[in-house]
Image (cartoon, rainbow, N blue to C red; front, side, top):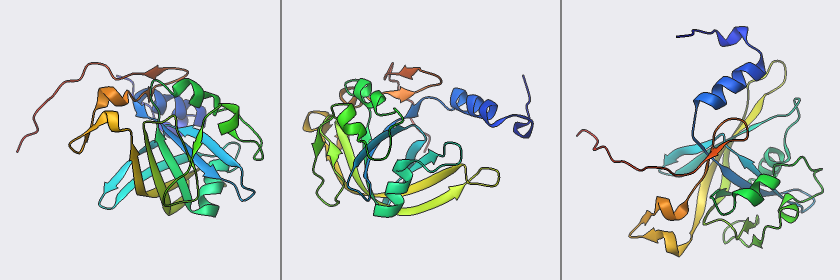
Length: 202
């Protein structure tokens, strides 16, 4: 087995080891609004649950050449955002939103996604997702980097769930109906494959 000190590696080498090892990763498609009223959308796979009481989720938004991304800036300024689960029916459109656009252009329009109003926040979601979560900002932290931060860690509180009725029954979500896709490394994604059950010890 190889044993490697990450301090001896470049940022890119560490990145490749991390994204190749920590798989599969769920993908959040995040919508935000800029201070000029532009609806922004971008996918992030550094995403997970933090807590269920209260319902909190985390996003780590990496900086590019030390520059804060539009999504992070919009969340910190407006304190609101919507998280959507990426599935096998919307992944192609959502992949288009990963394009580097200037802040005054909307990725939602580029990908022909359909904005839909939220109930508790001002940021719209998109109709093409089977699950979306309206979120308010709980915490933001600047982390990492050498000299300048490498990312913004965003903790959001879910204030409203929207779940397609076809995949919901008795308080549970059907994983096959949701058909979430996950991120691997490079250009690779994964679908839900074989599902197996192991009983947890008491």
